[in-house]
Every structure is written in structure tokens, then in C-alpha cells.
Image (cartoon, rainbow, N blue to C red):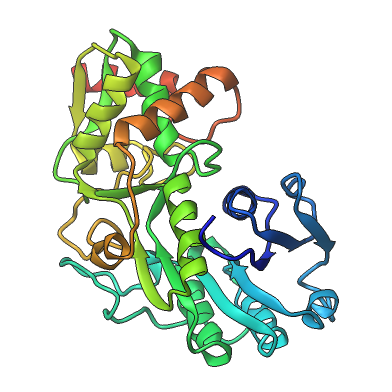
Length: 334
């Protein structure tokens, strides 16, 4: 170990990204404390849990009177982020805020870290998913007021095992279900995608904290077309059946949703000729700071292995079902 052990506070640490950050930091010899309600799961073994509800007054009292080498904040609720940044403004060496490329104004050219951000949400606005972009912009602004030298990690689409969004998993699961049967795919053009494996993101982030990196960084994957992603998913699933293309407007008219959620095709966004919030982000600073990216096939293979273990045909999945997909294929053929 060439770095000194750090006392790291993770605001969260029981859900996907926070928990993996805690686990990765501990494997590198750091002392990790997680502040969380504890309802999303347990902290990784070896981490210290401080139970606290961030909606309640005095949420940071138990951790504000200690010195921290580093703090990692992952929330997208503006009040949580502002109050934590202010409460812990004095006794912290390095601050990391995990933001999102969604905070940028959408354009149709390569976006680097100097590009303008969206109009931020109101101070302390309680937001839902429809205001995620504006909320991240507000959270960045409030973070930098209290911690001007913070590292702001603008993450792209994150994928890998345990991903709760089911965006990338949709394609490997569907390819495995289809096998030698037909598979419905959106016809090009579609907005390109950039996927970063959660393990690559977290490993780089912990190393960047150790190095004291400051400022904004686009932590994103390489740009690729939707068809490249779909072909890679079919390869790892050994799917050999025919692809059935459907124009984007036809899919939308027949109830297929973009991006994620109920009846969606994961990560797909029809290219309507309008600015998009994904797929156009520069990775130059991330790779220049040592950011790595494993092969797409490795990420997809690991996701597929987990999908098989959970059950490809399990109930309760939000994206487009195999049954509905076959109905749409029949309509196209008729």
C-alpha cells in the first residue's frame, strides 16, 4: 500500500454505489464510517454504521465533531446535500460529491467539464425523479459553496452487478430469453450510450480521493451506438435468433418507453434530432487521471451471470416483458 490509511465518511453506504465505495475503500486499507438510516441494507462488513435520518434536525451531530480525511456524498436531495456540506465544512480534508452528467445542459456535441449546467432546482427543493437533472445541478452548487475544492464526479450511465435500474440488464436478459428466437430492437438512429462499470468507477474514485483530486470529472464509458450494445449483449448470451427492427416512433406509439421503467427498453432513447442528456460526454479528464474501463463483454457477462442466478423469467421486472415483446413482433409481421 503506497497511500496512508484515511478516515472516510460515506453519507449513505448501504445502497448500491455507496456500499461498493465503502467496500472498495476498506480493501485499500481505509477506515470507513457510513451515515445512513440503515433501511436499504447493512453496511459492508468492517465498516462503522452511524444511524441517522437526514430528514431530521441534527442529522450530522454524531459525525460533525470528528476529523475526517475524506467525505463522500451521493445524495440527490438538495437539502440533504447542503446541510451535510455545511455541517461538515470545517473538519474535512477532501470532499467528493457524486453528481451526474444529467446535470449538464443537453446539447449535440461533445461535452467537457467546462460545459454549462442546467438551471438548478430551488434551494432545499424536495424533488422526485422528474427533477433529477436540476437537483444534481443544485447539489453541485451547494457543495461548492461549502467546499470550493471538492471533487465533483459527474457519473454517466453506471452498470454492473446489483444495478437497481435494470437498464443494462434488460438487454442481456432479453438476449438470453430470446436464444434462437426473434428479438425486438429499435431501429437506428438512436441516441448513443456511454456505460461505465460500477466497479471501475468506484475503484478510480477511491484512488482519486487518495490522490486529492479536485474539480469536476466526467466519469463515463466509451461512446457506442445502441446496436453495439445490443450486439454485445447477444454475443455474451449466445443469442442467434433474428433481430426484428422497429422504428422509434412506432415503438413509442405502441407503449414502449424510453430509458428505464415500466415497459421500457433499457437505455434506448429515440433520436428525434433534439439535444440529448446522454451519450456525448468527454472522457478525457477521467482517463487522464487514471480511470480504467474493463471490456464491455466482461461487464455484460457478469450482469448475465447474476440475471441467470436470479431467474431470467422472474416476476416483477419493470422493463418490456418477453410476452409483450412477442406481441409487438407479431404486429410488425402482420
